[in-house]
Image 1: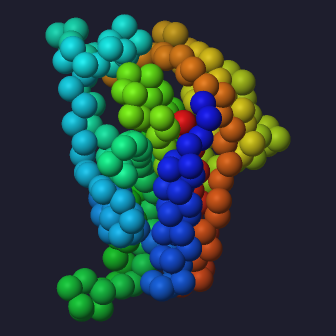
Image 2: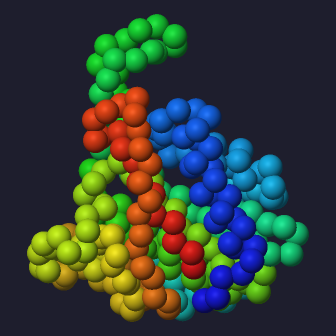
Length: 245
């Protein structure tokens, strides 16, 4: 899908957000996904109209992609869709999905202004297979929004992490039999077509919350690194992948 000038402008502002965060606020560290979304919105709202938790009623008549939407409730209805951030210029709308996955970081710090030892600064979230699935699910949902609504020409899936498990290079040895193989996010990987779990008899493959799905476009994973000098451990070094749909 061809990227519009408006989409390029939004992508540029997201890149600027990370640069400014490093220059003005020191080393980049977001304590949770909500904080990342809030700070990103504060930046974007300076140039665009911004809405949070944008509701898309998937079971309404306007959502014409019902047949291609695999995520359903136990009752068989389509799961509701809420887009993390939507920006618009009054004519075009850009949905932005944000994922923030961390591994644990414990340091001495301040708690309500009081010095505190062994403060849990970042949670150890784990479940990287589900994190990868969630990213590609975001890509697919944005594809469906672009296919359904004429004013949505492009969208963005943003993934931020300090967990190097996500950012492995494509030339690193990867076991082709791992269950999440189709969903991996290794640097330089080109992704298209159907994404599915390798082990059909696994619990997650049978879970209706994580069905297989097919991408319309072809995408290349690229990670941008954010250096963190305040926390010298690698656990505080973040990278982000910004995918334009």
